Length: 316
Image (tube, rainbow, N blue to C red; front, side, top):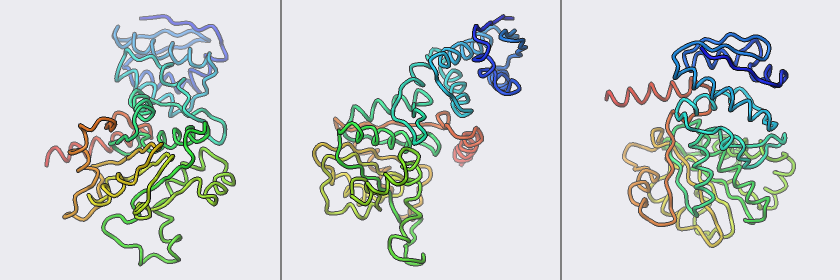
């Protein structure tokens, strides 16, 4: 049994959550029982679990003292981080300000994997990020691209992804070429508009300072002084990946993201991302970062779903 007390009653109420919802999450995550009264707590359970629950509460309270405004997703991510590594200091992760959303909310890593990823992007000219959906691969890269542009480190942002998935062609879709391609690029627009006013983003797109285009549009070009993000790279062919990587010019930084478990290419086509993983790992200046289902920062069920599919694959 451990008694815990916090000084600031207003912060304490926010920490505990509406109807002690956050305390309930801690109880479930660390297998403890918590009784609250005012700004005091009584934690019951195994001594090691009590220590973890107390660490989570104290570290998150310290974040709030530094004016950290958190969402439910942030709180869930912090719990998972402490569970995964009890030596983690949450402030080292959540106070790492990468950029800001259009609503002026700081964009920060939500776990150690994202923190390592952000540091690797800053350090390398070419970085491959491989892992399941929901781990923040695209969003963190996009935030760092916006930050680099705002600091004047690059003159252009290029966001691209394969426009043809599952071996299909675009001809059957209605509309002109732009209208046919747009659904495949929608996730990139969504992330962009989360970090920049829509009108400002459209203006930069019109000026060709921010370019959102299918991968095929990169052929024959040299991409200098740009921050380049290739998303959904598991759906590139070997030829497309080689073409893309050989476009990179001076003063550019390139991030390639993908989930090799969700390749939509025809069976006889080898993923360019899978091939790159096997042949480029020893080149100096190129780094590979890997995420797992434990690094998912979406709804908890997403991680559980990914785990279920992994188990099915293992049984095969």
